[in-house]
Length: 165
Image (cartoon, rainbow, N blue to C red; front, side):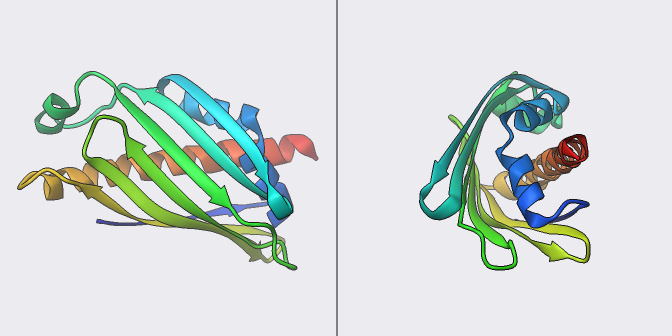
């Protein structure tokens, strides 16, 4: 199932990218999303890119027919591999989301680019749940969880940008 989420930031692309790299902002987003535990790793890569890995354990609020498959908690790994900045500050990333021990994942991309005085971020992906017959029913619920998490990350990132001014 396709996922597309667009977020706007008031900061420039370099400020928006800095908010993505801020471990404290990522940890705050995990906390606000209801994570039970989390671990955030940020590694700078050659040429000004970065690899961000966020592991979190969540108590999902899912319909009963899905909850019985996933149990009382789920462990999610989110990995973003960001490119170096283009001349205008734009960046691209590959994004991989996996639910450990479950046949569910998302492969996608993220981009940040100038938009007026601020920044536009677009995350797209393909969510797949490899459970015969039920996968198509579960995918929309996973998409909703990912969309909610991305909205929280945007709000916390926006707060972080404003706190740096």
